Image (cartoon, rainbow, N blue to C red; front, side):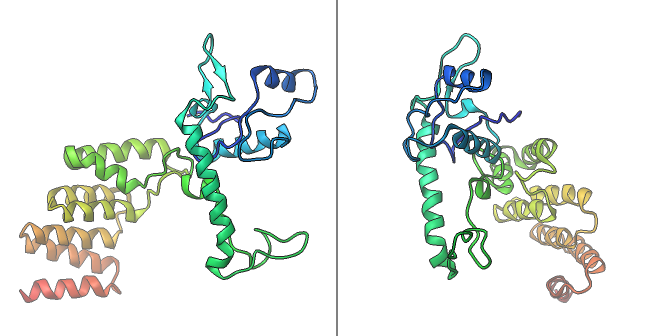
Length: 263
């Protein structure tokens, strides 16, 4: 999705841009834009340039466009940036207040002072890290974890549907910050399938993971658990032997293998 610099979103739209005329005069004749309208969280005399800078940060943090929260219907449609019609904008104001309240409490929670002096603050040595919109949203308007999205898809269609969703998200977001496509993700999803008593689905997820991470000892260990659940002790032993070949220091795999061989 193309990200527009004026974008706004769920975790950030506390300030509202002015009318279309305001935007045009700001871009066109070098005239100073009048104050923004309907500011409810920030001071009403906040400079328009500061508002625009914040809108850009919201856009990048949530991966959305202006129309996510603002009434902006496109050519021939209605544009009303000051309107509170959309639920996303109303929620956003509360979310920004929540974010700010967390940052106010952070120094006491982590036991670090916010700092003192004219240059102190979030970036001061020893000061606690500030929570930003991006901290949770990671470029997504609804910041769900990959395992949750894939598990939900697999709830009705099994591993076939789950892996289809995984591949869809991977092709769209791989290399970005939105989702974690690391070695542990599909292992976690497989373990959830195993907990749901779907060992075949768990094996399918782990086999897919081994295509991306062929030296994943944890994938073979999880595969052994799934095969054990199916009563396939011989297959589980083979998986654990492979896991130990890849990671000889894994006490968990070694203990699991000894138990199976003891049986």
